[in-house]
Image 1 (cartoon, rainbow, N blue to C red):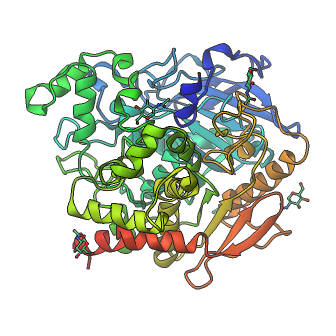
Image 2 (cartoon, rainbow, N blue to C red):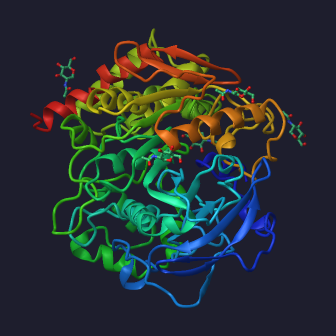
Image 3 (cartoon, protein in one colour):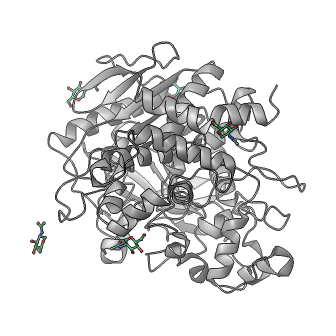
Length: 555
Ligand SMILES: *[C@@H]1O[C@H](CO)[C@@H](O)[C@H](O)[C@H]1NC(C)=O
Ligand SMILES: *[C@@H]1O[C@H](CO)[C@@H](O)[C@H](O)[C@H]1NC(C)=O
Ligand SMILES: *[C@@H]1O[C@H](CO)[C@@H](O)[C@H](O)[C@H]1NC(C)=O
Ligand SMILES: *[C@@H]1O[C@H](CO)[C@@H](O)[C@H](O)[C@H]1NC(C)=O
Ligand SMILES: *[C@@H]1O[C@H](CO)[C@@H](O)[C@H](O)[C@H]1NC(C)=O
């Protein structure tokens, strides 16, 4: 168990929970959609609203057999009444027993079926593109549906099954993201049946889901399918290279399941002969230092083989050239993000020694920047000078390691995104930091028996937007209830109007001069220049903006 927690999200204990926990049977809850009829079930929101819930709705044909490694195929209409009363299976991933390759389903939650036009939020789950879940037990609608919106939470393919990218026509990549596009197309065609307004759609995502949101902003496939965007703790603007293949991971996958490592030698046919469990159950095999890297599967800039391409150039290049959806954006981070992982380094003498002595090879692995080049060596040296002034690295430097984790994995990219998008969009950008350190956390300090939460960690804000019943009780009392009230009100306002402000608080839009952001804690307050010195140094050292805008032949 201890080990499972170290992976991004999931000490799921999924098998031990009862799927029927929330449900009251309401067998005559039927909705008619252009594709056919669905039977749903009901949940009750935190404030007592009835939530009409349609669980496990198929949005694409089963991506199995000949459809494995292919873009999603839209679901065909059906004649029977589709049973949408059970959560869908998880897409294949490690640490969960009962996954299914036939996993392209979504959950829809609405408060009425009265032909109204309510704003819609589509939420893309986190999990590094290698794990994650759409279930109502994890992303329960019980808090956010106290706002009168329609919520859609989909699965999408993960790992090799969703992101195999060999740079060749057999597997140009991004299928997991094309699944998300198919979800957005499904919303356009079907959400009116659930009282949703297809012209009032907000895409929201966390971590890999947040990165997905920023990718949809620049993807030609997603253009026109949404109207507002929320990128939580994840973007495509960080130090992680976005290139045209993921051959390194494809070869790794081949090694793990005894397939040939070369495409010309039958790599893909061999991968097609394996079961989905064989392909997906070996996440530990990808780890190169402790539990890192955190980012493994990534989007790719698809070479043109005549296919419909999700990503055609680097996202920064798209933004700078205004080939980007000009929609209101809410973007931000938690205060400590992945900083807790610093304990794994300082609590392990061998690891700490390697982290110090072999930093030029190990840091690019952990922190995800370019490997094996003169530039990479320069970045490692620059980061070392900045995060460890005096050059010594020992147990006493845990905070430096924590900051480096927080900034390189998440924070820097979000800051870069806020800055680039506020410059290049006409729409407003709102920037936040979630700094509330609650009793519940996704990261407890090792050795404290899960009793001392570490700061405001990656995912911690999700506890107050969704009812994560696999982890916490429903929050009905302060202090947590106050955070739920504030967070869902702010998010709800933004989803409805593109402006997060309630009468009670005035959160100024982000701009390069004042650089104001909302600090979300037990009280809301405006601050400015978030981690300015750290983020500016990281930009200077990694030259992210300069490298992409200059070297990629931008005008
Ligand atoms: C300590 O670090 C070493 C070197 O990275 C690693 O091989 C070992 O598994 C780690 N030990 C623990 C208990 O995590
Ligand atoms: C590495 O740093 C040196 C010294 O700062 C600089 O002259 C050189 O151009 C850098 N090389 C790369 C590839 O960034
Ligand atoms: C953790 O829990 C175990 C078993 O309940 C107990 O023996 C141990 O002393 C606890 N450790 C700490 C640091 O609280
Ligand atoms: C935040 O929550 C508190 C307590 O629930 C409430 O009094 C306050 O109005 C909320 N502020 C905003 C901006 O929603
Ligand atoms: C979206 O929905 C909200 C709430 O119903 C409404 O106030 C707003 O005008 C709608 N926006 C558009 C563009 O239709």
